Every structure is written in structure tokens, then in C-alpha cells.
Amino acid sequence: MKWLLAAILVLAAGIAYIRLAPSDPDTWHLDLAAPGFAPPPGTAAFCSGFGTRYSFAGPADLTSFADTADRWPRTKRLAGNVAEGRITWVTRSVIFGFPDYTTAALVTSEQGTQICVVARQRFGLADFGVNGRRLGQMLMAAYGYLEPPPLAWRT
Image 1 (cartoon, rainbow, N blue to C red):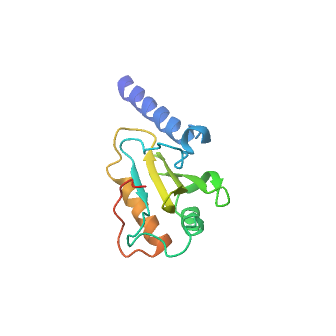
Image 2 (image 1 turned 90 degrees about the vertical axis):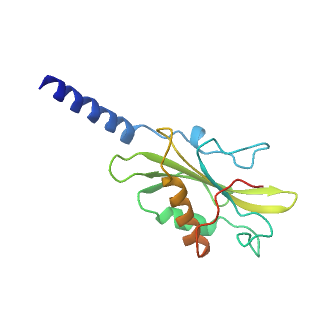
Image 3 (image 1 turned 45 degrees about the horizontal axis):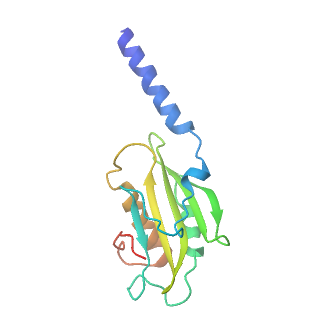
């Protein structure tokens, strides 16, 4: 009986830590436009690209994505804004409240400006595709894509 009680207390402490651990913007508000930036391993990443069906006819703008992400279930803005050209959100899972981070930014290169988004988990080695599915759904909702775009980092 003592072992069961100890196991329950350890589980409760773990869940409390996951739910209450602070999210440091200096750690999670990635600068996607930094020279040589590459998404961390195991992340879902998208860049609108140039000359693809996911590129923009007009100037790239974060407003649509920001509006969608700000209304997304269990999601709160952590840092940034549209004027800055970079925003990071925290989305928590339904049951345990695991935090996942999504950063969207305008990235400028010689070809022009594109929107790039990186979604990643804080805890664990794998997210079983959760961030990729959410990122695809957010992009579809924000830009009217008929299917989730391929998630790959290309600049």
C-alpha cells in the first residue's frame, strides 16, 4: 500500500511540474531568421518557400497565422508580435498539460520574404506527430490550404 501511495505522489508531483514549469521566452522564442538557423531535431517545420503553391502572391504577413494561433485551443502567446515579425505560442495538451512551443517568423533571404514556423515539444524525445498535425491544421486554417503542407525546412 505504501508503494502505491508513493507512486501516486511521484506521478502527481511530475504532473504538477509539467503543468507549472515556467516557459522562459529566452529559451523558446527562437530567432528563425538568424544566420545558419536550423530547426532542432524532432521538430515540425515549415517555410512557405518561393514558387510553390504555398508561397504568397503578395508580401508575406504573419497576421493570419497569428490570428489563428491566438484562437487555437489551450494556446497562449509567450513572446513577440506581428510588428516584430516573430511570435512564439505555448500550446498545452489536454490531459497532462504538456507544453509544446510554436514559433512563427518572417524570414528574409535574397529571394524575398517567407513565413517559417517551427513547432516542438518541451518534454520527451518524441511527440508522436502531434506538433506536425497541429502545425498543418493551423496553416490550413490561417491560409486556406486544402491539405496540410509538407513540413520541411527550406529557405
